[in-house]
Image (tube, rainbow, N blue to C red; front, side, top):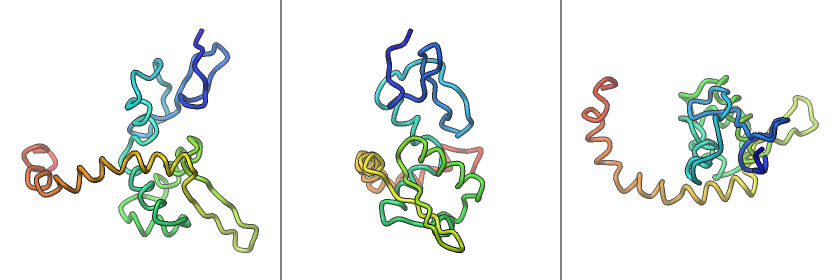
Amino acid sequence: MSTRSADSRGSADSTGSTRSTRSAGSAHTARKGPYECGLDAAVDVIGGKWKVLLLWALAQRPQRFGELRRELPKISEKVLAQQLRELEADGIVHREIFPQVPPKVEYSLTDFGTSLNEALAPLGAWGRAHMAHLEATYPQRHPAEA
């Protein structure tokens, strides 16, 4: 029986094993076992195309759904809603509903989300430093997409 807590690895089922409800592609699948390392745990939370971009956008200021949609114009409404729900379930994003007509919902980073965003800062710096090279070599590295 696993003694891992559900707070950092997903939800514990009745057998005590821990499961996550998402993967890098955002399909809802259960993990097959415990995390291998800290990077495995972090990627479980931020995996997928849009989550790090949502973290970046919400680090600027709290935003409403429509603002996030305009900030990331290539994301579909369905995927945006799904990604926000997953980030909220992970404690990364806070969703606040204001009691007014029409209803107003605003998304912001939690302290947990802010700490994750700070941890991603060096990765962003690496990307900026190497962006020209990565863009220039993209067709060679991804021939099927070019």
